Image 1 (cartoon, rainbow over the protein chains, first blue to last red):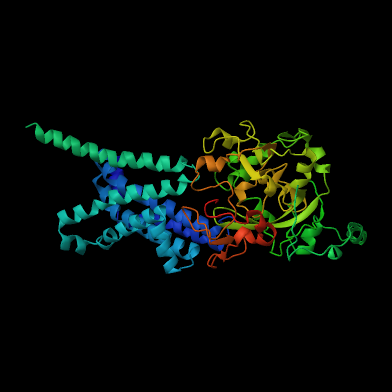
Image 2: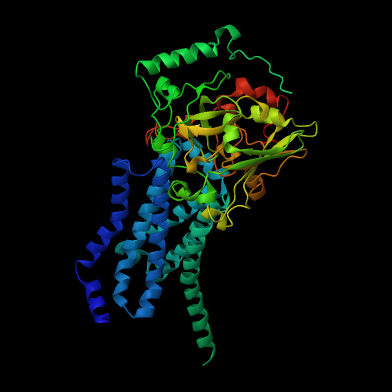
Length: 209
Length: 323
């Protein structure tokens, strides 16, 4: 079983398949917009669903390392970069959809909105923190930075996850509608908690010679 | 009780078509075989109702400002995109879940500071005053808007019958909260039952409407059947749905949304482009079904464009403080 999974992940077609899978939500949304199947308020539907897919992509990206260690499927690591870059892609579309469909690309209005409203500021900050990560997501950048510095930089993804979740909670707060934020929050807590637990475990191990 | 100051928009008494004349015209049209779900809908080019619900005709309202010139929203959009948390928080939830609501028998209890409290059966309410058709703009606090042809009459008609006392400074509206019929009531999203309120002079304003139907038919459950309010100059959540109790009170009622988030939803909640919601601007709105995906949103009007009719209710009031 494990061998079969590993072989599938290492197969030359694995990344193209993942690429197609990651593109499906966008294709579905574009189809929905063109075929007028996004309900009475398609702009709102587009903005929200792009936000949903940003979080799902990010959470999947953050799940790769724990899954890899728990299952021993080292080949999972091959998928992490594409998931991360797609998360940034969906985050950028989410921001673009907000700026265009909601704010009519009026840059001064957008700037004022970001400055004035904490939940927009949170979302924008999460996106801005993803920019350096996406910009250093290719091999040459890793080499140029050096593995250690690259890794340190990419720890930012934890902050992106937390700030993105805050953005979502804040957005739902006015309506007291926390069912979804609770689910996303619980999963993020597991993903980040696992890392913390590992780190504390490693510290304990080094203390005892 | 109600002091009406004529505004430039008010029609002169001589301009109003006598009731007998327009009823005759209707009959003539009907005789010619020209029938539609709603005479108003016909006149304004509105999409007719779904055709599945009983008809509820009304006469064209003569109340100043009651007939918007905007294009009516399609019946499909108006009945599929709703905020009615008793049936779920998603805007598609009410249409999916509200079929469990039983709208008959239905009684409304009128109580509190009034000379003639009582329990009104729905049929009695339907006959209390002549049904009118009005076309109102509806502006949701979330930044979208619709234009709905409602059927009903001025809330003032019912209030007058109850004869509120001098202590009746406010009117409180309570919606049904029945876990068996309303799955959303099982969640803790709001403190049920849903409570809303108006100042007595707001409630007596002829534009404040007690609604029984839309698009020439009785209200679909997801839109607040069997009776609801339509207060067109306030954000939509002020118009309580599926009302079971109307109470005259001396103190300002604590409405459900104010209780849930006071800094976001004030008691007045008049549509006001200059007072932004903490999480978004209220300066503009998206007209559902009309403004294209990439169209710029349209500017929101003070009191949702009903300023000529209702502006004097708030003369001298700081609308930023009394949001």
